[in-house]
Length: 224
Image 1 (cartoon, rainbow, N blue to C red):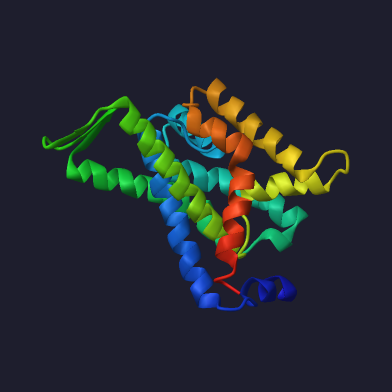
Image 2 (cartoon, helix red, strand yellow):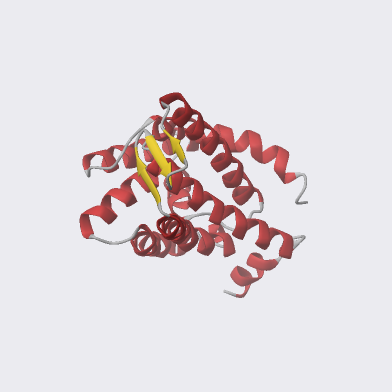
């Protein structure tokens, strides 16, 4: 256990990494909120969690806290090396950042009816192509902050860690193949539970890994 806790803090520029990790995870939650509201889908994990939250009557933050804690137990049991401060940040802050953004928008009187988003009475965001463009922009921002989160190397989200554990437990399939099946499986589960599966979900299920790897290489040089 001493080595476990030691590995969590033995990183260069630790304070910088913690700050970047915290900000990136919160921004991921904000992006997920708007992707969900614009109805182009979210990442596969959130699709399932949103559907489950609606079924059991919980907020996304509370539902993800429960699901991530259950996943965390498995990760802690099988591969402690993937756990760090970033693991804990991701477990709770993505869902509660989503809730916080919803709280702020409710206080500001923002209403949303796809493909229209109304900001009070002054601005109506109703054009289909503008909504599509907004989702593409949100996807780029989301991938950017996920790349930062991964690049600071402060632990892996339980959802991501489990796919790595499954890949490492066998030699027949590559991690990339396992990850695609993992994401597609959650996408189908979310869809069957009544979740919103859209263009963003499909793109994330099949290509978010390579996109994060490409962007992460460019971010990591600023952290070492």
